[in-house]
Length: 400
Ligand code: C2E
Ligand code: CA
Ligand code: CA
Image 1: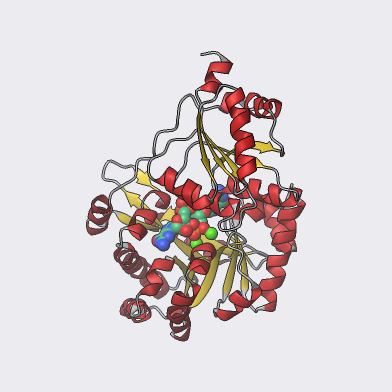
Image 2: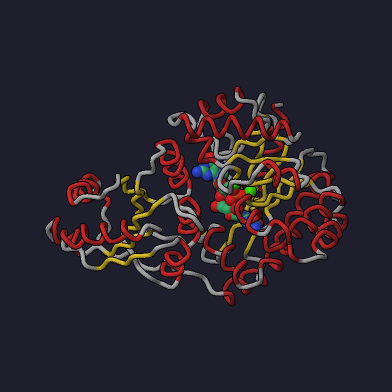
């Protein structure tokens, strides 16, 4: 296929709240002979189209939209495992654009580049040709999603298991905690990561069963480790959807106590963006979890725009800075600024600060210098099955 034909066969979705802009872009794409173009004036419609199986090769996305902004749209696209590319309309503010780009990178979205307004035929050709090698050969296939029944069967068969990733002190890399990360271990040996089944469990109302099953397994192992003299705490991810069950705090503390674990030895990690969508309903359960002694950690911080007032409403004990900012800070002054501001905010609210996604020595030293208390990432260790983690921890304490 010639390059022109390849461009002409692309399926494109344009999302912008400005109708004039939609008209203008559609006219431009039309001039290029691209005729499969969908125009949407808000993020919700665009996401519904993708979710309902709409196949697009490129989404042209405006960052600055009133109801749901482009950053939120990108986050959701990643959640739906959108496999095409994204092109961003460049905002007036270069820093926002840069941050959006690094965020997209962290979510494994493929950013084709940016287009400045008004969009011209040449700028579109330029965008496509610069990245010609990355052009999809055909419309991306809809991602294979597991069904509720498949996930449920996996839970019942104990195929969803905890992996453990060390969280270590930033100054001397001493183990302070381990984060539990769910893995679906298929009998054929395949290991499926959470993004393929957690959203299904959330949407189909079975996240409570998944959370409880995983928590039981984690407590079994953790209780034994504590008893054998290993000393660290455990980070455990909960979904915002777990927080509308009023008996959730009792349920968790009962399970923990069955295995000789105190709530204060556990940090419950909740993702910032999902939480802030439902803050009022979650607040009651969060507060009671804290009263029972659980630590509360706000996860992926920086991606959900909580205000200081909102943050202060929830008795968080820990703040985890999203890896987009940790990894972006080296090259991007805006990411660095967000990182610094997050550390300062956390300190003011008396929270422990964790830097996520630390992948090399440079990042490790940088976040330590900036005042992060704890680091987590491939630089220290990848998430491991229980036996491997236990070996890692024993070796670690022998040497420390
Ligand atoms: P998260 O809570 O932000 O977990 C950190 C993710 O970053 C994990 O991905 C981890 O494997 C990955 N990671 C750790 N260090 C590095 C690094 O240095 N570089 C890079 N690139 N990645 C790193 P994972 O295990 O795929 O989990 C993805 C998300 O799924 C988690 O993000 C969490 O939000 C969710 N999740 C995982 N387990 C559970 C669970 O049991 N319950 C709930 N509700 N959500 C879970
Ligand atoms: Ca987490
Ligand atoms: Ca995180």
